[in-house]
Image 1: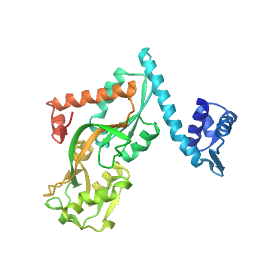
Image 2: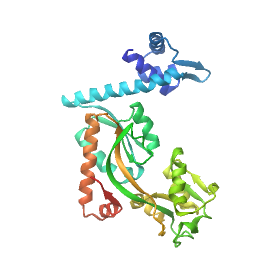
Image 3: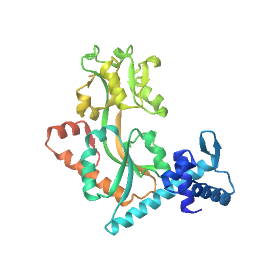
Image 4: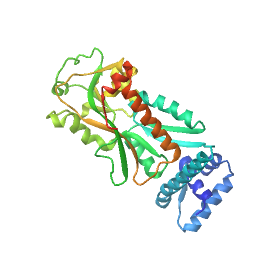
Length: 317
């Protein structure tokens, strides 16, 4: 298998057609089609099927795609590392980050990283680990800073723990239930929450079941966007559930507040998650070093905003 053949396969998978793949790779459609034919001939397997809407990978193509992404990602990281050693580092670093960290610590980390590696372009994915894990598997993301939980597949991934925090039930300012003291007084309310598909049962147990609370699940709605969730919280009587550090962010603190309930909820942990046995490239290690530097500095800071943030966190480094 040759490099340009794997590049063609990845581009076709991402773009959905040979024409779009050719545009991405800046080559002719004929060159992309030829690379694909040569790859199929070498493997003696059909990798794509054509339909009215474009090109779709077969099961063989999907299997090869994962390995192709990993190989191309490793090559890109090797080229970046060699460029760094020669003083000419440039390229791209892809990483995932927990939403509340993106709103608190990330801006300073990015500023510091850009000072150290100004020619490396960042691609940052905000979201839950359910978004990051497939990308870590296929090599299109080098690491993620996110939730480390029992759902993390331990044989596949390893983590360096950063801090832990509590979860809180939240409502808009002035909500009629703002003074209640138990989750049992909130079972007649509608909820809007943000969690991945696989976490439904754990979420329901964590918020309700462990406290003996039984809620009609038709009252629990999901938003696949934090901004959408915040908008619904602010403009309706819906309740939600989020990390306490999120409530330090001005756009949240100005709109919602935690309810002071007798029940204790989850203690979640944030860590740097990487594929097991994978070695971070130069740019990724630089970013992690910047992150750790910012965390340690701000944990010692006397600034009001830093004190408020780290009062919600238990540092694990």
